[in-house]
Length: 297
Ligand code: MN
Image (tube, rainbow, N blue to C red):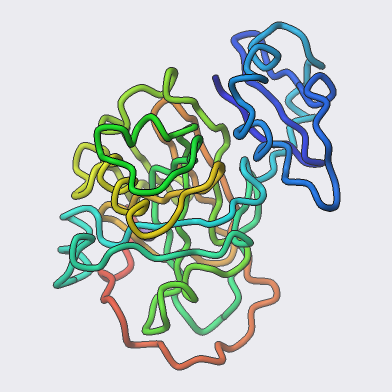
């Protein structure tokens, strides 16, 4: 199944015949004091799946598809640092995920397909990181690797937008709009093996990152098992699995596209209209990214 959240906390399912708005059929409570409808769909998926799978629903035109973050209110976003060998090399990192563990991004950093990533500073470098994202279905604690994929609700495209420098990772990656996701959540029956997904990231027409998740240092089951040994996973939690080589800077006016096999293309625009001078002094410290690629070719 391919589903997402549209503006107004509406639930849409993509079928071979187009996109169906299922919101009214689901009859879920919404508004103050309630989880997002997607969080409720994930928690009650076994019960609601027949409604999501049937042919009913309001058919939406392409113009009516205003995407929101697929999970608007995850209880947490967990991210993997240095989880591809080629990215470790390009960053001149001594350590990788099995040295570092994981880090957190704020839930408020989520953004939907065709959203605007807002760069906060005009005097610092910001990079794209193309990643396979996943959303937890059944939560849990101390999940064993062989059982881990059974806890995945869906896979999606995810951009781990990053301020370069010496500030803490949780700061550099948690600005509002710094976790674009989507466009669709694809359930495991349709997504298939998470160890064989292609990722391709372009800035404008220039390809910057191309990788396959078979090259992850910690594969998806290892990440889930480790994370759940640290913290209780909840339905709707998001995990960013790490980025391959090719990270590069983005600036005002850029258009970034991340294609993930079987998910589709996540597009965002980069803007710096309200950028100010950075109040922290991390410039020139922290992991060393490669020089900006020349886009003249
Ligand atoms: Mn990352």
